[in-house]
Length: 125
Image 1 (spheres, rainbow, N blue to C red):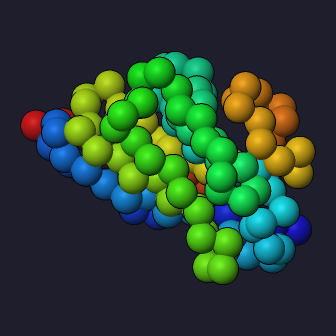
Image 2: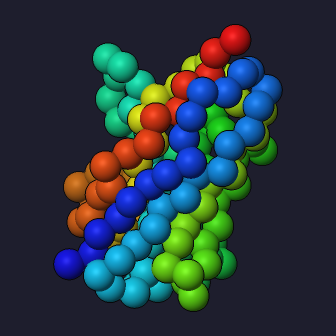
């Protein structure tokens, strides 16, 4: 059973940066495509970014292109999301998710088999 644990969230001012981490245990992460989702209060969960098993292919939601960068270190069983130039509308709980199907750029939540518990990101002055 794959387990995912997110970390790195926090309170940051507009324009600030954070590095979110998704650490896996139980199985090796390189078998899975990984995505980051976020959910703001009162809103549906939305896909932010995803990365292929090897890390060679990535996708970003239009709202975060040029500001967020997803990467993975399979040797460390960890996926990262570098979030820069944060805006108040980036506030939410950020979740990582793993799919046995590999790379799923459509961000269909039903395609992801394992989810972490989330880490809160709050962007406010």
